[in-house]
Image (cartoon, rainbow over all chains, first blue to last red; front, side, top):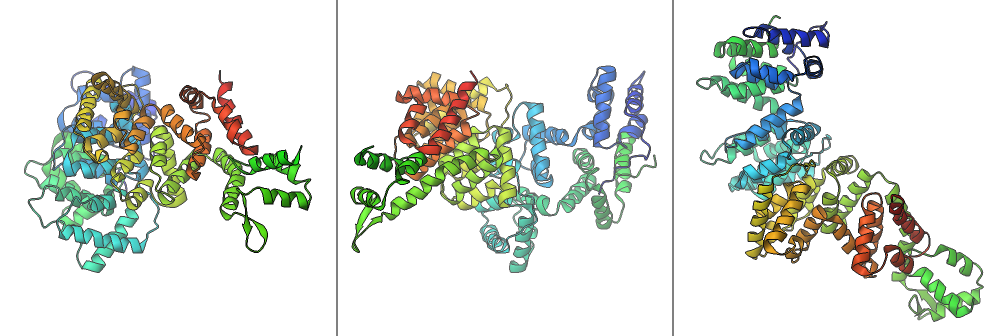
Amino acid sequence: MSTLIVPPHVPSVAEDSEQLHKAFEGWGTNEHLIISILAHRNAGQRRAIRHAYAETYGKDLLKDLDKELSSDFERLVLLWTLDPPERDAVLTDEATKKWTKSNQVLVEIACTRPSKGLILVREAYHSRFKRSLEEDVAYHTTGDFRKLLLPLVSSYRYEGDEVNLRLAKSEAKILHEKIKGKHYSDDDVIRIVATRSKAQVNATLNEYKNEFGSDIIKDLEHDDDNEFLPILKATFECLVYPENYFEKVLREAINKRGTDEGALTRIVATRAEVDLKIIKDLYHKRNSVPLHRAIVKDTHGDYEKMLVALIGEDDA
Amino acid sequence: MAAADEFGVLTKAFTGLGVDEKSLISILGKWHPEHKQSFRKTTRDIFIEDERQFERWDDRHVQKLQQEFLRFKDAVVLWTMHPWERDARLLWEAVYKGPKYGILVEIACTRSSEELLGARRAYHSLFEHSIEEDIAFHIHSFEKKLLVGLVSAYRYEGPKYGEEVAKSEAKILKNVIKDGAKKLHEEEEIVRILTTRSKLHLKAVFKHYKETSGNYLDEDLGDHLILKQTVQCLCKPETYFTEVLDVSLKGIGHDFAKEALTRVIVTRADVDLKLIKEEYHHLSGFTLSHKIEEIANGNFKDFLLTLIARGDQEN
């Protein structure tokens, strides 16, 4: 469920483009105008505005935004304005080039996007970076991480609801055995998590619970020293409980001392048009405070205003 | 035509690739029972003396003949089918009626990125699984990682590549091969480079490899057929297809060799058959059409020759 609020009567693309151009005129920038327009347009509308802006002024709207804005606010506006596949391509590029073992962005994007969505990301990545996502991931990651991340970003999962219960039972058994033996990056574990359809993985985890009495996610929490485990855990969460995963990332980003703006920006920008409403409700339930209140407490200025607008809580 | 000649023509009509329907009609169609019996008694390759005093058609030959009658139909079906469905079905057969690693490599590496994606999409529709999950599940050998990687690739197809990176990767390959590991296809760097780099990048790697080691990369990988085929399919598919044709046309009578003839001609007719023809001629001294005239029969032969001639029209 999207949190994006688009007014019932939207100005023409030409008008929006003109207003944005005005927002850059003279000293400083009219951030309020930028937020009031961009934070209330969907992906198709934003794309049309970018196109009109380029035709009218001969410049790239994103480049002008880059020039005029700064820091967290700028990053949020830039990420938000991009087309979703392009946005994901930019995020995966950053995650790859600055890869660390604790970085979960590649898992997040590879596993929460629908199959076709991931293909579009890979296509956008070709256009923008003149290489394939998988060749960069393979080159910049190592060991067990590469073993998991490469097939994850290369997957083109079947998206039907059909489930093979017999297979789910046998693969639940395999997972249980490997996890008990701490063989977290075993070939079969990777195979199951990187190639099976989401419905099949879901069925497998249900069988796991039925047969062994525990949640696989809980079983993956026992080894604090293992660096690979959090990534494997995130993989299952993203495949089967994405909204829970996103709520958790938001909660940790806000609770962190100083706030993790990177994560906050990323989740809000990438989920506003998808399922941020569900995540919002979950957040409220889990933390007894509405998301927008937590954001207002933790951030300030135009960055705060843009976030609040995207989660559908500004009264604009 | 003298009886002995007719027997010869009929035998040829029944053996070889495809079936000579015209001869069957013109000869068999006019034979009386004595002629047919005479044919059966003298053609020991096809008919055996049964203990109950009749000439029994050798079972294996009947099965082969049924295949030969179907060969034209199979070729027509393969040609008419949407390439995505065609490739998806070929992939499925390669996994479940094999495993035939060569075909998996062939399809994953000689199709364009969009064509491979289309095949994966068609595979979803036809078989309700992804190709990668089926390969990963059913193939247990060491080649699994390479094959899953090849089939999952969505390679960049633009003009840019890193010359320096290509040079360094040629060096990596040189060192790995020199170390003489037994299971080269499990070597991580070889798999990484072959399953993720763009074809243009790999051609550059191939070139640098030759310049620095004096050898061709595919030849140096010769002990590991699957790696050799992978490199050929990615860098010079005409060479790969020419070798497949050569084997199948030498009448090495395995069914998969005969199926390969159909598959190569049908799948490459509108792609690079002209190049393949030239290379085949260079390799064997014969033209492809000449060879097919020699060993194929009937409608099957005509169909293949027609497809081969298509390439010539684009002169």
